[in-house]
Image 1 (tube, one colour):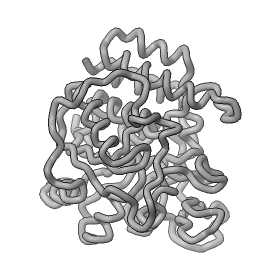
Image 2 (cartoon, rainbow, N blue to C red):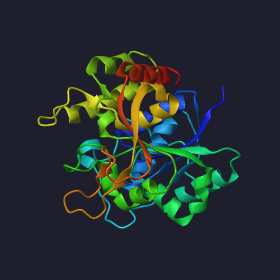
Image 3 (cartoon, rainbow, N blue to C red):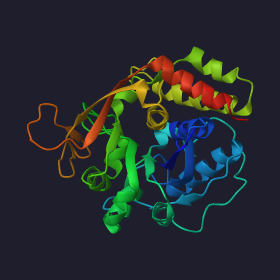
Length: 311
């Protein structure tokens, strides 16, 4: 079976870490590189977390650090969600390999330029690296198959009333990406808040018996505790970033509709909102496949199979 060539751009983060694990365990993706951005934690911490997770699962792709801050704004991070390290909870040893000396943008550009086939980009953090790449090298768009991202929401936000965190961190980068003309799949809060995992399912990962299953369970333990705090209203942990990877592996798990979507970059109360034209008011061509629902059981089974395939 032909594997799907992808580059994963992430900001680990508990759900990014699980997304990486699923990607490498699936056997479906040909992962050309893992690049990191700032978002869930500072740039050095997200790079270190990617290297630690990949070392732990004994996978050694090209790993490169990207932009240190958003295109136009001060960096916003989320230690209240992911802890001081960005991966609080499990005990992970130090990385066993070094990142590339090249920055993320150059690594992505080199891979795209030299590839004989189009590459799918899977960003699960702020879109800074991708936005900078497309602004500097618009000609490279023809080498990108599509962009499957975790970010945004058709309705509401999780960091402000109108904005999801990844888009809010760098709305200008998101604006470049959404206006690029590249096919985009948006796995936003509409679907990720339905991609819930519960305590009994976490225990199923722990019982797999391999070290990766234990790691995933410990990541979920920490993530679950945060989301169960009073006022959040979650009965489990929503698995945001794994949705983007799972869509790349098996899009039949998901339900989606094509819409025209714009990024709000100026609004006082709506900065970072992904404005979905449900009623076709703008008369614009659809530019985004908006993912709205999923078969949760199939999604969890896909995760389970991928984790079981690893050490």
